[in-house]
Length: 246
Image (cartoon, rainbow, N blue to C red; front, side, top):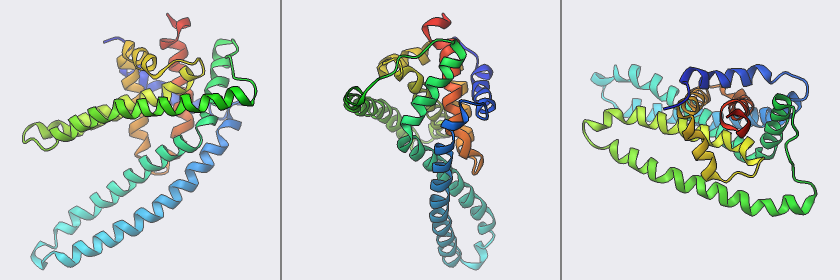
């Protein structure tokens, strides 16, 4: 497999380091604010749910099994934090998508020195909406069979020991595809071409997506994941995946 896992992971941190730069930070403010608000709302809901779940568990366990609460409670809080981080990241991706495309465009123009062709006028932009919906459906149709396969393996004794690793690898691959889609969509590449481009440099793509997936699950740190990942994916596109990188 071509590429490098460490180089791929490094694109995320390179993207993170570019966020304060002039001409880039203005596209970071809204997604960051949206992430903070969503994380606060979802975090509050998760706190109430986990707290009620802990109360129910403590009430259901007999006294002689009370020691289990010392094991279960940290795991429940950890799971709640991770799920909150992932959920807020996904919602931010959904609601602030136009800003990510603009951010990818500005970063590519800065890196390559070439202007990215953009849609001009209301009608061309309006006509892009059906195309965007079809692309999101394609992503979902691509993801579901693989997710179902890993889910089935999770219930097979012996093989289920591999399921955490498989879930992480699947998440890393999908994160890579999701964020690489922003710079590639600016050039009107279909989702099929996004998959082919990532597969051509699979290790770099997995390294990048794996780091994004890992950071997304860390509460509070995950607030800056989305803009950093968009910039990092654009760097990956410009340096390893794009036509000018060959």
